[in-house]
Length: 395
Length: 143
Image (cartoon, rainbow over all chains, first blue to last red):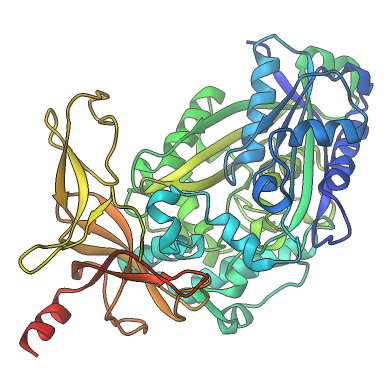
């Protein structure tokens, strides 16, 4: 397989853009990524375009990627539409990676775009619940807030995690988000503010939950040898790409039996590293306290010890293993089909030392190894899709 | 009345007829599934599954009190994952439970009944599988 690098990344800031069409959101991200890559756009051979809810929310079916790419000025190249619940953009990125790694293409584009503010919040929230087996859960009112709440409640029950621990994650990530110009919510929140915000799905309060949002993110990927010719920026290699569907229990699995771990382990093995080598991570905290569960499932700490990491500040910007320096899903925002590529953009900026006020410190200066974890949907008792990517800055 | 899905559960037709969920069991490995599958995920075979009634009893795997709910649902209400005695983990709503923290606990025994899940946009009831604490069931029988 060819070695693949991320030559450029770009985003449209996440937020509420009632006046903007999804084509405009995506266009900003696509051209930002191309500028960042410094690549001649004519060299782009294919595009993998992720969008999750455009069918139900915008009425745009079947050809969302082509609509977005034609608007951006591209014609003729193969366009593949990718949909995989909240892991949509990571999956688009993986398909792009595969196409270069396999030798079929040399330079490709991965895009994730979502527009959720359509003037009917109830409809947008309802659209999210469709990422389940609707025959089984559709009429039953299953809410993802409730799923996360139930998973967290089991941890609280078993390990004595406190509501303050859950809120502490939001305090950390909202501070990170306050430093991120691409973030939807930039107000730092205190533990007290988080705990006194409205209860949504006990023990999840409003400020622990991600919101609906609009946004887009994109990446240009290419063969490593070409990047060395074209780019003067530090080169960030895709060291591993792993994608799995669920197989166990989201609520009850031991961390080392979880789909997150099975996916992460595959990625660590591909890259020949372990969790202890990761210097920065972007993880899927659709409800912020899920980040705690993910510390254990990604191997950052043993089972039950996640709260120690956040209590001791180990996952903050200056900590041992900074997690969600972008602010995570609750602060940067979670326009679902764009999130995975926003995570990847953040890790690429971090590994290049371009993350500004929210730049993390690795073991020897600018971090060398980064991880993204993005999951989505709920089918047959487990996550429907989990993607883990590892990135390495080359010298 | 609209049902959630006839192929997923049985509505009692009269006295002595009990509600159940329609699951299936693999004759080769013995695993039980809900919703019913077209192939056994353990054996990866499509010719070993048989339909069986399940889900009359189970235990709360976890629960959450929802203070924000989709249209047609009461606020607050309690959502739960139920570990059925036969093995499958099933999403449902907990009824006859006070929507307060600690009103129920993980591990509590619950019992199936068929009833109104919510009202549709025209106010018509949608019928599906619901669970309530076994202790409540007893109280009703006594009362």
